[in-house]
Each structure stands twice: as C-alpha cells, then as structure tokens.
Image (cartoon, rainbow, N blue to C red):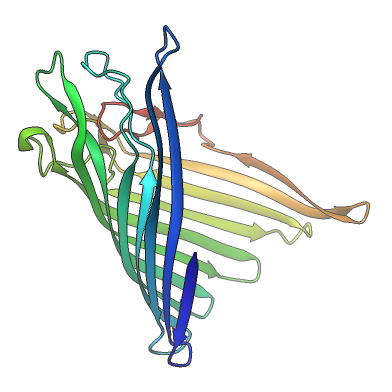
Length: 276
C-alpha cells in the first residue's frame, strides 16, 4: 500500500507506504529428516520518501527510509553447540538522502546512506561456541551514479561507492569498531555502449568493474585482495518474419581473471569465487 502527495505545484512530493512481508523457513536434520527449526513470520514494514525540486525539474533533493524483513541466518560452524540452528527473520533499516541533477545529456545522482542489520556473534569458547543473533553491522557510505549520452551513438553509464562498514555490537564488545565482514571500502563500475556506423542495429558494449579488498573475519586478520574485471558484449536488433528480434552475446571476465568476488556472510570467514 503506497500513496504519494504532491504539493507546491509538484515541487514537493511526499510518499508513504506500508509493505506486508512474509518469510517461511523450515530447517531439517540432514540425517533423520526431522524438522529442527521452523518460522513463519509476517510483518508490516514502513517506507517513507520525500522529493523536493527547489530550482525546477533539473534538480531534485530526496530522502527516504525503508524497513525490510530478511531471512534469519543459519549456524554452519561445525564446532558450534547450536550447529544448523536457524534464527528468526529479522528487520533491516536503510536511510538515504541525496541529490539528482541533469545537465544537458548528463544525469548524476549523489547520495549518503546508512544500513543497519543484525549479525550473529559467538559466545563461549572458540572450540565449542554458541551463536546468537544479538550482533549488529552498520554500513555508512557515499554513492555516485552517472549516465550520459556523449553523442547520438555513444553512451556511458557508471558509478562509484565509498563505504565504511563497522561492527557495532560484537560478543563482549571485543571487536566493536572493527571493519564489518565483507564490506569493501571502494566499489566502482564504468560501462559504454556504441552503435556501430557500419551495420545498423549493431551495438558493442564494455564494462569495467572494480572492488577493493574485504575482511573475512571479525578480528580483521583475514583479507581477500581487490579485483578488477572487464566484460564485453554485442547486440543486434533486427526483424524476422515481421517481428522485432534482438540477438545478444556477452563475455564476462574477458581475461579470465581468478579472484574472490567477496564475502557474503556476516559471521564466518567465507569467500565466494568470482565467475570465470
């Protein structure tokens, strides 16, 4: 349910919304097949947004707040007393404020954001820990995105993000203030599309993606290096039997770089291999 109110000749827009989200999780014993944990949770979460255009349609100031519901984490530590336990779904909070402006064929967006979410923490001895979901991770950052049409046949699309991920509530406060697991300081991408002059309908594209190093553990002792890859592609728009058809071919990671794409666990030293 969402509603938008326009004021001051459409120079101010206020949006208020409510979302009903449901998550059902069932965990089974790998040996017996018995259900070990089950959750079926439904909550209503708010979404608020405001957009102001004080200097006409080319510049917009905006702010929003969104609350979401995410699936609870699973304890995968083989030494844990509560291994395979599934925690209840949890709420996440995201706040953002920024500005969007258009200059000719250039469109730019710059925003500040903050995201907070619960994380798992290990209590007790390292040889036989018990996990809880009382931890917290907070990520604050600055994001810039741009799109421009340099010519009628050449377009650019890119952006960069600077973020500071911090562990704000850890077991016994031991790692409070450390960099959050799986949070790179820098991320960036730049892509281009070119409509070729020698064959109508043929467009060539390329994109560079780069991510800085990330920590894999709460103590900030294990780290994966930064990486940069290049993707290329082509598409051909034509007609077959009177119908519009688009043929595409893409090559991701053109130079077959071997890399760790990142850590997508807030609690464990787990890294994911990059796509070949």
